Each structure stands twice: as C-alpha cells, then as structure tokens.
Length: 450
Ligand code: PFF
Image 1 (spheres, protein in one colour):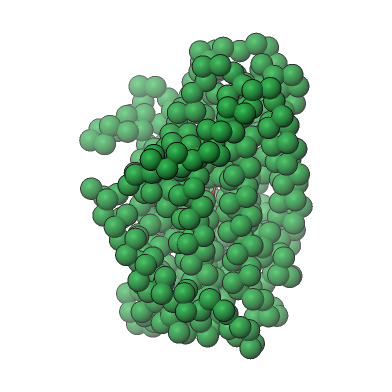
Image 2: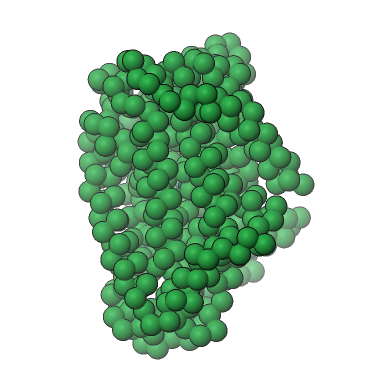
C-alpha cells in the first residue's frame, strides 16, 4: 500500500533500510571500544539483554506509532494526542537528528579518509603506535581536509535522501547492506584464524560475570539505544513507510537481530586482530579503530587490503545511518511544512554541515573547541554525550510513557495485530512498555545527569 508520501516496496525493504540505520559507526567503532573499556565479554552479555529486552520493546513502540499515523515524529504525536504539548517530543527528535548528523558526519568523513589512506598504502609499511598516533593527530586536525571529507559525506547523504524512499533509500540499502555483510563475514573469518587469535576471542566471548556493575549496565543500555537508532523518531519515521500488511514484531526482531549480529561480528574482527600484537590493550577508547587497527594492519600479511576493506565497511555502515538521520527532519518538513523533498534535504544538509564545523575544530589542538571551558571536554565528545546519549534516553523514556499511557498500550497492540495478525507476546510487551522499560530508563537518565 502506498500513499503519496511514498512507502517501502516490500517488507524486506524496510528491514534493509532500518538495519542500515541501525548498523553504523555505533556497531563497528563504538561497540568494540565500549566492550574493550567495560570488561569484554561481560559487557557483551549485558548488551545482548539490553538490546533484546529493552531495545526490541521500544523499537516495536516506535514502528507502531509510525505506521499507525504514517507521519513524521512531530505529526505522529500531534495526530495521536492533538492540542497537547506531546508534539514537542517529536520536535526534540527532529532537532536531535540534525545534531547527531552534524558530529556523526565528521567521524564518517574520517572513515572515507582512512579508506583512502589504506588504498594509498599508508598502512603497508611497518608502523609503530606513536607513528599512527601522529598520523591520526595530523589527519584529524587538518581542517581543510576534514571540511572536504565531511562535505562529501553530507552531499552523498543529501543525494540519496533527495531521491526519496523507494528511489533513494530503498535502492541504496538493498545493495549496500548485503555488501556490508559479505565484507564483514570475510573479515571475521580471516581474523579468527589469525595466529594468536584465541586470546582475543576469550577476552571477547568468555564472560567474567564479576565485572558486571552499574556502570557496565548503564553503558550497555545507552549503547543499545544509539546502536538501534532509538529514542528520537528515526525508527518511527522509517516505520511510517511500512505497509499495513507487514507484521511489525517480526520486522522488529529482524532488525534488532541483524544489528546485534553486526556488532558481535565487528568485535570478532577487532579483538582477535588486536590481540595478535603483544602488549596491545583493548582499553583504548574512541581511538581503537583509528589508532590501534592501522598498527595491526601494518603488521599482518595482506594487511593493507584487509585495512581498506575494513574502512570501506565503515563508510557503508555510516552512510546508511546518516541517510536515516537526515530523513527525520526531511519527513517533518515535507509533512508539516509542505516543503519539496529535494529542497528539504539540501537545506537540512547545509544546516548539519554548519553545525558540524565546531566538531571538526574539536580536534585542532589549542582551539577553543578542543577544550571547552566549564565542561573541560572537546566539542565532539560533548555533542555525543548530549545528543547521542542523553537525548536518546530522554526521548526514549518519553516515547515509552506516551505509547504506554497516552496513546495506550492497548491501542498499540491493536495496530500491531491489524489484519487479524496474532501477537503472542502482547502481554509481556505491555508489561515491559508500561513498567519495566520506563523504570529502567528513568534510573539511567538520573544517573546520567548526576
Ligand atoms: N544507529 C547508528 C549507529 O549505530 O551508528 C547511529 C544512529 C543513527 C543513531 C540514526 C540514531 C539515529 F537516529
């Protein structure tokens, strides 16, 4: 079924597109370094629970709202609860999308730069850690180069979104997602066979449950929200293009599973590779992918090609996520402000570009944005905390409360069971959306603010 807003051509088209949104830098860059810093396999274990017990529940809430209203997040809240301030949650989502796009696009630009570096053979000479550290510092503080890479990324994103749901996003994700899986399977298969891989595998897969503490739980849940693109209406927007024939719980389960599989596989590439080099620590933080891996690539046979494929994988993953970020404000401007799609994509793309410039300057040593007064953090880190963490948890909490008590959990179940579908887990889902998920998100939000 299609109205004039456009819609996915098939059930699988939504799954590819939503998995494209979910699978991104969050899976391949953020998940491994979070795992490295938070106790390895124990973090992986908590993450799995967070993704399937909390993420899946919220995911289903968002797609139900999207499909019920067939609108952008602002329009969706307005339609389900007219003349109330609830539409502000949608506005927050639209704003969050632009803000995440602004810094995420900068990191996405790095992946393009590093793919070129690998291609040029920069990782084929023997590199030491300090050499790569200098390489990264030089690269990320090169303002001109970063402006070019960032604008290339935003332009690609604008182009795809301009072509619309079927002609742009669906077409691209249908090709890129299978390609991403192929590359990932190849890399993981190679990595687990490296000599010395066993050490990495055991760090990554053999949980030491004594390492689970409140910090691990907090980071795992936040990671699940970011990784599944939840809490800001992206999944709601993609859900608004789903046909009434599709069974939402099975689509949701597919997307959450694919996203989780990719995160787990990214770890399978990174940890065995990492531990082949003696003395390499998994606790490197955000630099893990850009600093540690090039050293490793330079030392393993065929590493240059391996490295190129790895960064190409990151480029693909990031692009299918940035288009989903741009689609949120674009859908809002089309539905609510009657803008043309192309104009909306271009204008918002330009806004995100301008908002991203301080995130580029954040890596220039000595610049104002590299160490903000008061917070003593750099601008990019601050943006990730505010929009990629706080806003998603806050938005997720409000969406959960809205679906459970304002629109009503029963109304949501009615949408899910449309066309005589049977939803076996309706009872459990209602229990989670009404009590368990909001309680957990509330506690997380409090501890995040404190
Ligand atoms: N899920 C993406 C990732 O894991 O990289 C990031 C993201 C995309 C977050 C879209 C939020 C969003 F709306």
